[in-house]
Length: 199
Image: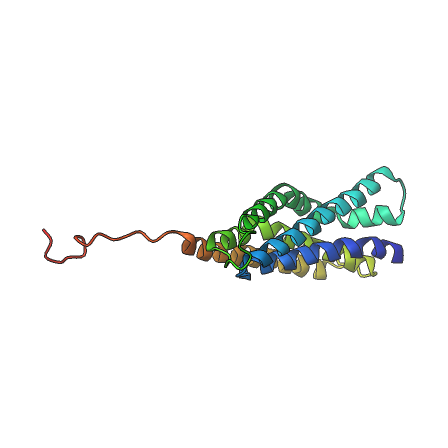
């Protein structure tokens, strides 16, 4: 039990740290800080993907009830979100890191709304945070509490998890929309159209 928890805790900690860093990116107003945090996020995400893949692969290659097998079984729920993070989030984080690097010659430049809107895109932060959320049942099970054993606990736990994912998705979508609207250039209005006497 303890060795299984030893395997799962670093994986859960990596995804949790990636989710927290991703959530803080749209609030950053300095380009240099945005680039640095994006670099951290890229390292955390790649390490989390690699460690998750290593645990799942080790569970497939080993036979029996070893700690790696139990850890891999617990991470089965996180495999899907981790795959989405590897496909979507990593690409967007790399683009954001490169975009922030364009302002490297002027480190005090405020982060433009376009970069902050890209940092708030749901496909950047949502998969990371959902993966972190999906590792929680595995960690709880590794401590000796089986959420699937009691149906009166399983149903509410699934409902709370689904509501949490929906709330995170809505929050990302609203924040991305607000920042994307600010990034749009102002369209000059015609002076003739505002004249009430114009015929």
